[in-house]
Amino acid sequence: MSSFRRPSFKKSSTSSRRGATRRSAPENDRWLNRLLDIAVASALLVGSAALLISQF
Image (cartoon, rainbow, N blue to C red; front, side, top):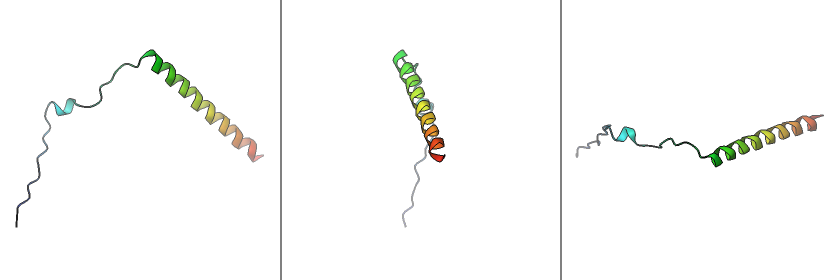
């Protein structure tokens, strides 16, 4: 019978610092995000109104 050794996963100081870095969004990204928010909110309002109207 062979003995199975599990690899040990130790946290090092470099592994905890990996990952996505936060960056400030450029001005275009902010405008696109705002435009997308408005489009989604409008679609939800129109869809809700259509559902309410179709009920009566």
